[in-house]
Image (cartoon, rainbow, N blue to C red):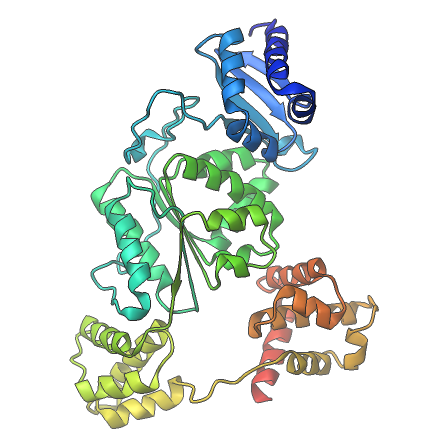
Amino acid sequence: MNENFQELWNGCLKIIHDNIGDEKFDTWFKCAKAVSYQDDVLTLELPSMFYKEQYEEKFYEILRMSLQRVFGKEIKLVYNVAMVKDDTASVVHIPSTRQSSIAVNKSFTSAQGPASPFVNVQYADVDPQLNPAYNFDNYCVGQSNHLPFVTAEFIANHPEKTDFNPFFLYGEVGVGKTHLIQAIGLRIKETHPNSRVLYVTYREFQNQCSTAYMQHKVPDFLRWYQNIDVLLIDDLQEISGKDGTMNVLFPIFNHLHQHGKHLIFTSDRAPVDLDGVTDRLIDRFKWGVVAEMKKPDLQLRKAILKSKAEHNGLNLPQDVIDVIADNADGSVRQLEGIVMSLITNSIARRVPIDVNLAHEVMRHTVKVQKHTINFDMIVEATAGFYHLNPDVIFSKSRVRDIADARQMIMYLAHKHTKLSSPAIGAKLNRRHATVLHGISAIADRIPFCKDLSAALEAIEADLKRM
């Protein structure tokens, strides 16, 4: 430990002050504290991640020059930033992510850890959590998913290139998003066996993050994820209103992106339509390619039906394929279900698969007319379940039953209608933040509260009967 490092840091501050002037210095550097200096590593304590970003983006050159002049050419820099204000247990140690002035080969060398001049940590390989069935070979391509497929294949075949980083794929449930992003991971693992590829649903990521907070291991959690080469996160729309998880994902995103590592996300809506997500994250989701995965068109539906049937050892007659494709215009998942129902019925009843059987199966699996649920129906069904006058739900009352019913309406309106959170709040005379809290409160309690889960099922059953 160099006992004079405080004096050396003060010398750096003088150089910085002379170069940037009083106003910028008071704003950005007066709050920085040098907390340790050992083995040529200087650790600075900063108020927030925002300061760290500014140091790396706006003040890097003057910071580098002053540090090297005072401390020497071998100086390395680490930032201490509290992820939660005034919580010392949440302090994260983040090495400077800027490269030196020497050109660095950014080839895809995943086993070597982060390409940073300040740290060189090696981690063992991880279980990628990929399903071998979700590969490019059995992925059906048509006009409706051509752009996402071409983008995904390019990323998978050229992981050393970052033209499409991040890749944000969105679309309705069951259109093949999970299959496509897992195919990327599988291809990269095939061609780069040492690469650290990880597929994780957002809910799994959130649970891990929550555990890290509770065990005061957020820094370890961050370091582990920052050493992934290809990170695939599914169902990202669930991040809405989860401030703690967003605060953790943000530095992970920055670190991986700056080091040429791939970030791939799926969601049921575009980045601009994500309610309750910070602007800085939404902005980053749009840095690369945002592609919509649409429902399969007619020709693609036929190709999917043929592929799924052949996969199950079935030669589906063309007239059966045509009648299903003409009538079932839903998701890939729906088409898979129809094929499996045909096989099951044919075997159980010992009848051939023909057009008549296809029509019979579709009567139970294909909705002829979609049942539309609106906000007024949700209020009526919820008020009926809780035995309340609908008018009290719109009042300022905070009585437990009324508040519970109000939050249930927020959750159901978010789930079953296209109303945005501000629009739901306007109808209930509540603030946007209150709506986000209400939606999260119900969503978080459903897995653990049997009474709440039963209430939700009863109200949704009533809505289907309306």
